Length: 295
Image 1 (cartoon, helix red, strand yellow):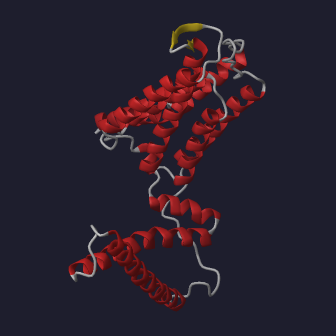
Image 2 (image 1 turned 90 degrees about the horizontal axis):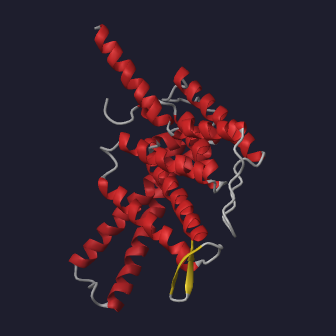
């Protein structure tokens, strides 16, 4: 089994619920334990689909993490524990830790966003929008279709005008005038194409009455388990957060919340939630090998 194929077979609604549940705690808390679990889980899960996430992306994330970590103590000097002084500006331990935690939060969200775009293709997003509103799904479909179509047509018009010698890009005035002609020709073509599309949709019966809805994605037992597990784990995290179990103070000194049973349960719940794609993949691999041995 190549990569994490589990989410690719799940219903888009259940996958969307999972990503909301795993990203929401990171956006509403600066607890280092939650942030660390999120970062490690997102990076580890990204290596499951490493054939689609290249090494360059990981290098960019590492550079961004280093820049964000170093920037906070350089520009903000809050905190009472001075590590050293640079250009008469104190570099404090509290500011350094806060910069590290905030950088880890941003990087983890970027990793989640990257994996979200891999699993939630345009067809899956359209399916989600169609659940909420069929009109919104239609508008989004047309936008995704016509935006690149108009861009390609504009490039063809520009290439034709350059081939005809109407303008040269090295001349600013000719470039502006030629760009105006390209925009005018593209806008006129778009209006004409829109009229043709509207007439075609009317001929096919759009807007005449209620239409039957077809869904290519079935909501199976695995989707119920994924959705219920994500919501249950999020409920534990929200309960702990509402009770102040995640309150973490950085300034003027670092003060961690007391260790309680609820706090430990919340950390465990978010750890499971963060590593859930990897856990599901391991279960799928073990199940696949077990079935192969029975053949």
